[in-house]
Length: 302
Length: 133
Image (cartoon, rainbow over all chains, first blue to last red; front, side, top):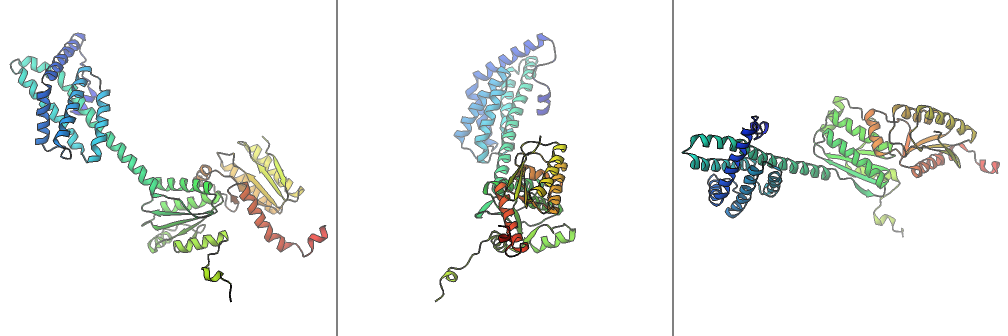
């Protein structure tokens, strides 16, 4: 139904005369909806509560939102332009998504409004069946488009939020940390997919340049599994770092990963590996010419 | 466009200023190898900071320069490869194997100095410096 409405806008293909009468009918319809605003809006809010939709919101909130949705709805019917409604739907979604409102609830309330309005039309025109038919002809496509707009707006907003969160997780998931002058560590936790591997490499290369790093320790203790793709990404990261003049030490290869890599025959001969992060940092310090000693070793011998 | 080659102590520094054609690259290679002998250079630095693209010919030329200079007694270090360029290079499999690389000119000089230290101790006979003076 919704798709059909999208394909066929409310304007019929027929000559002007018909268009005019549709417009006239819509005007009449809008006038009717304006007149019965209070009553229809209350009826709608009641139906929403009864259908147990929007349970995350209080009754007052539902009524307040119902009022603005109703007004926007009528306006969209009247003007035939959906921009205002679209903006309102987006704004509404932004407010209700964090409160856990689901897609079926939003679609549900819009369909309920459609139902409430259609019933009131039946009530008004039940004596003149022909007129009712024409009114519905004018109303249905517009109403479908309205429902479509609101639902799509909601879903789009949700997708935008999901994308944003994914981005945030990605940003957080690859911290490049400087532990000593010219020494960076990059702990990798979780699954490495091609996209993340790429982002990780880019971030590391940028960090090498900004921090003027000579040695980088990549710790993969937190990586559960590795296939040849991921291993090749790792080799590429090591190679690219070397092109910027930094040596890479990889630490924390689990027994499973070590076995997999040898079994599938990934060539890691170019890669320096050390058992654990501690060993990796010690090796890196050695490369950089640091020597860490306990304080008592520095005290002058008696 | 010809790449200027500067002499700095025992080192030659070639600083690439703009994108080069294949002919320019070959010319740079010849000039560098010739000058390694003429100036008795011990190190060559090729600065590619200004390059935002590096194709396979450029990479091969850089590698050739390093190997040829080695045969004539100089170590080569490529400096200033941009992060984006490095990433693109490894994806294309152009990894400059066996060629020293460094972050920038300063690092490159530090690298060559470090290489040089070992060599001076190894090769110069004791008192070599006095003979010269």
